[in-house]
Image 1 (cartoon, helix red, strand yellow):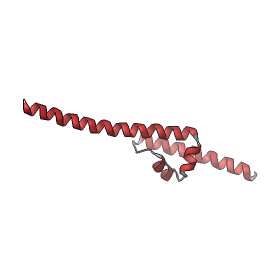
Image 2 (cartoon, helix red, strand yellow; image 1 turned 90 degrees about the horizontal axis):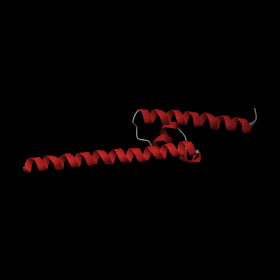
Image 3 (cartoon, one colour; image 1 turned 135 degrees about the horizontal axis):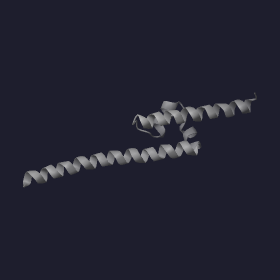
Image 4 (tube, rainbow, N blue to C red; image 1 turned 45 degrees about the horizontal axis):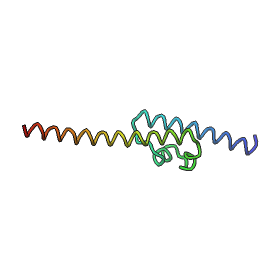
Length: 89
């Protein structure tokens, strides 16, 4: 094998490894962003941004994580308001 073939094979292996780690993180409910995936997969953030499928998955998860956190905060606030209304009646 030549150097180019080795490089291509290494890149393919890194993509597969990164996708597997990303799937595990999602299934485990871990926070998924470029920083956490980069560290866990031992790849650079540039690598993650370079591959559209990986980049898009991470971006989608970031939106989901933010939305879940915001929804949880909103639920707590609404519960407190409801409790306050019930106490004032």
